[in-house]
Image (cartoon, rainbow, N blue to C red):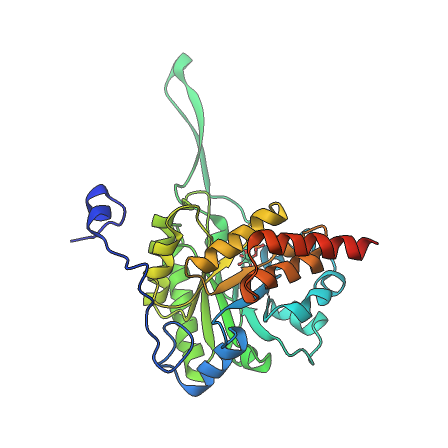
Length: 324
Ligand code: 5RP
């Protein structure tokens, strides 16, 4: 019998044990203690073994939206941020063309793609009725998201050549291409497990998909069950701790659209307090008025125990210092 999360009855019966940490005997990272040496070593480059957290700097947006605001010249805007993150999340094109091979940062390589912001919608047009009641209609397939029609876009040999620690694959639960994106995930996990490379399943949100805890519990858990070693999703205003609690592998949060700096710092802080293993943040850093200051403030929250207000003060001081 299907167990549909979130119905009144189910909500009453579910127990997430949000105050009981999941054990990982002998290793610092949730769900990762039974992996082989190489996988653990790669994860230790991404997540700081001292606190189990990471700051991934995400600037892979160009793989489907081209020169995103703030990423028109990655050499100018992202390289100054590189010293302050733990891991660079990027495409192979940018890695080879812009990122110095001498970088000491871990690499999270975008491994899915094949669609763009202008991929055509699937539509039907026609007419209904007779005579004066005749009307034209235009329909879009429910749940159809053209962006979700992705394939794997990087071979495992290429990932090894590029020394990736993590491979990122988008998963579109609830879209017309759900099955295909889950197959991308499981194929990638099969390839990557052979060489001890981690796979990060990225929860994609589309118009047909709600950004709430119920949806993210479903999506993150499905990806973990299917073998993702890390899961990336959005923070939610309510019940985020239930998402991290019932996902057996580390969750990192995406930043999402640019918001005021203090709000972004609060979100990062709350997410970590509620069980996230760090952030995989892009626009809220590189679209900030003072990206290096914001990067350092995010670092303060994730790694240095700063409260959001303290981190925001740091951001303002650094911004003022840079301007003077
Ligand atoms: C693209 C991604 C991005 O890496 C992700 O959205 C993170 O960036 P941002 O913080 O700007 O949301 O996965 O699909």
